[in-house]
Amino acid sequence: MWGQFVPRIGEIQHLAGTRASYGVSDNMNESTGEFDYVAGCEVVRVDALPEGMVSVDFPQQTYAVFTTTLPKIGEAFQEIYQTWLPGSGYQRAPGPEFELYDEKWNSDDPYSEFYLYIPVTKAT
Image 1 (cartoon, rainbow, N blue to C red):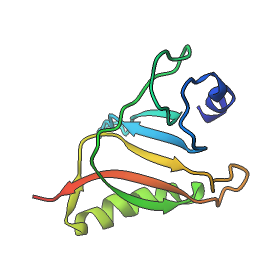
Image 2: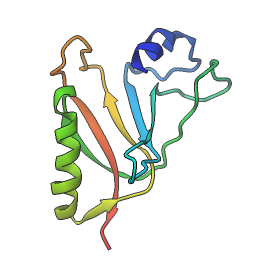
Image 3: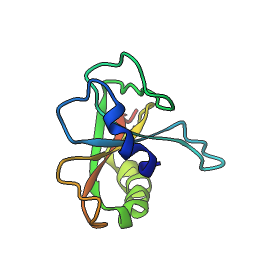
């Protein structure tokens, strides 16, 4: 997906002034492990979308933020959901989770760090 998205970034209108990119995950099917995934970047507003692209809105909410690398992403999600979340006093909130690749991200370095944002709310 990223290989198709990155060359088309120039088609997107009203880009925010950052070099950040996002990998957005939502609609996880617990029984199959399948989910929706969208590669994107931040825009100031959405007027018209280039063909084949979609818009995703993020609800304003609390996120737990974790740092990882591509080779460690699977371990990071396992640590988050199996260890950190159960002992944190938080629970997973509805809504998309996302990867943030900021200006420090180097796509040529697999050990370049990026951030995982998991929506959370206080556990009841």
